[in-house]
Length: 433
Ligand SMILES: [Zn+2]
Ligand SMILES: [Zn+2]
Image (cartoon, rainbow, N blue to C red):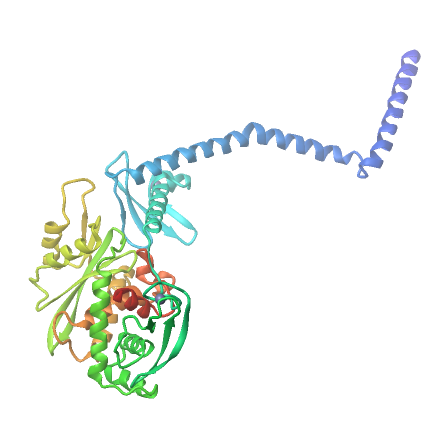
């Protein structure tokens, strides 16, 4: 027993020595002593947990996500699989396996989908991927086909394209002064006045008048404003400018195809033409707010809207996947005649019931409201194809920035970029070439 005890003490004391040495060592490198051992153990244990439990799960979700992405791509690229754009925030995507349709909705915190996969598991489902992918493709195509309308440069001889030009006196017009140039190469004399030759006012004055008119000023107010600038012209002169340049720009812009989306809206608003009540039928692209086509009619009920729809097809060289109108019968007939096809994906016609607070209807109402305001001061249109409507359409599509489009114009959105601070001048000069 004693022997054993002494042996035990001996053993114990030797371990004590080691322990003390250990502690000394640790007190240098790990000043908190053996307590650190616990931390290390916890660290090792949690790493083990991560490796064995959490990592495979993350891996699983990632693999799963790539599968969903691929499926989403498949849906977006499948011509038979409809992705319908309902409005700025809502898309309808058909289920691949059932006959159901899911809503994919953009919220402040990201996309949500009404399918079970998203509803229960709160993950980015294939429908969300499909919508995101289709938006991406569309934007890429738009960018690729973008049309740039450049500002005319005033540094080249219009005859021989030489940049070796010098100022050569000022021509005093009856109304405004015009800088003249001469070319040192071909000796020709010229001024940079493309599109405005022989006009009684400067390009700046004329385009300011147009801008004022289309933002809602009456012809009387426009002429008053011009008088303050030292330009004395009659109402009829200003009206003549608007007519001339609207026709010119219209012919030029006819040759450029807007890359509109595939959800369109049609609506009608009454306007006064020579004191008579008439209806302006307007067709608009929902996504870009591009005002595609228009038509003036004597009546609202019983008007054949197929002309409007046909015009829109010709202008955009495409037809909508989704057409939203109010309940007017003629839209139904026109839809069946112009847009309906047996081929998949079959286009859809939604007859919209007007509700207050409905954002999308408001979008169309706003266009109509804009037009009605303009109409108040226009004292009636002269005839159906009045330059007022055409000019207003150009103003709406190409000149006026929209708050709802991050201050871009509908033209910017459909891939038609107009350069320069004064887009009227850029358009008129390009149209005059
Ligand atoms: Zn979904
Ligand atoms: Zn020259």
